[in-house]
Amino acid sequence: MDIQAEMKKKAEAAKGAAAKLALLGADVKNKALLAMADALEKRSEVILQANALDIEDARQKKVKRSYLDRLLLDEGRIASMAEGLRQTAALPDPVATGDYSTVRPNGLEIRRVRVPLGVIGIIYEARPNVTADAAGLCLKAGNAVILRGGSEAIRSNIAISSLLAKAAYKAGIPEGAIQFVDFTDREAVDVMMHLRGYLDVIIPRGGAGLIKHVTENAAVPVIETGTGVCHTYVDASADQEMAISIAVNAKASRCSVCNAMETLLVHQDIAAEFLPKLMAAMTAKHVVLRGCERARAICPEMESTTEEDWSTEYGDLILSVRVVDDLTMAIAHINRYNTGHSEAIITKDLVNAHRFQREVDAAAVYVNASTRFTDGFEFGFGAEIGISTQKLHARGPMGLTALTSTKYLIYGEGQIRE
Image (cartoon, rainbow, N blue to C red; front, side, top):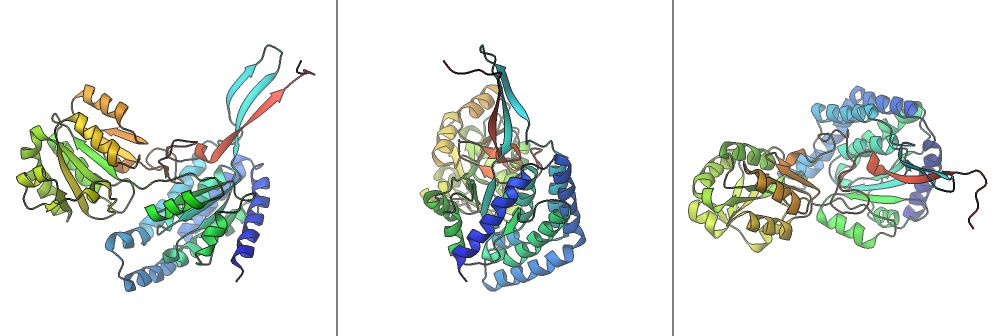
């Protein structure tokens, strides 16, 4: 197979479709999204059969439990994918909406409106739900999409993308608008990264290695979605029962996702009382705790930490614990080791809460809530294309608006520049 020729063919089809898709009204796009959601649920058995084969392959390779969780689909997760598409259909269409207007002294009327980005490439690993989320959001924002999922979910992704594309085209979406790379050669990623003139942006979703490779090697502009080394800081004034509940949720509700907590920081004044309760609650959820020397002096059953632990995204039932002197030390630790994703403070002190939100450098900063809410679905964006940890163009959960750019429309009456 000539990978470069195949990828260029897909890119040309997507670019042609994007020009037509950008002109479609919200009614056509919404009709397509609803048809796509229905297709997922009505043909769920096709998806589940394909996913079972992917899961069996992964088990044969003896991948870790958290990786299997990312890969697994069931009726509930398929229903959630469909619901994401329906929520996206219900959202206001960002295309052609204005966010600025003025009349200049010379009479020129200037408006700024939102327009699609064009053709978006998504490179992702493991989670087959990304196929539906990305296709739906790109379509609603008027963009064509080229999806390149990981080899570990190839059957699941082919089944999902095929159902989505057929339903969308039948509902009036231009053919070619939803492209899936249905071969697993790694060369496809490198070709995608250099399709300047066809792709307008690439969004990588996956582990640190994939994101680093794309951001460092792509010739196409990249929106970086980051890994999640997320922290929760339990302040001296914290409601300890609330802190335990939030910590357990942030770590154990789904440890494989990027908004799961990886490090817990505890104020020294409450550490002796709080840590044994934390240990019991986490152990009940099968979480392995690794503590600093001060934490282990209180709970010797904790494993020892290394310097590497503080910057590790485990994606597993492992939690690093550190006792800190005060809020200043907590903020310094977070800003040194975090990845700019999601951070939380548990406190009754509003001054400390406001200072934490002001000084912590991250896309999402919580007070008295779990980091697990950093998600487009929870933020009311419908699905999400990813969680951006960079500072240009978009930051945090990226919904529809993040998949558009702007255009200036200028109206004159014969004005010329002197």
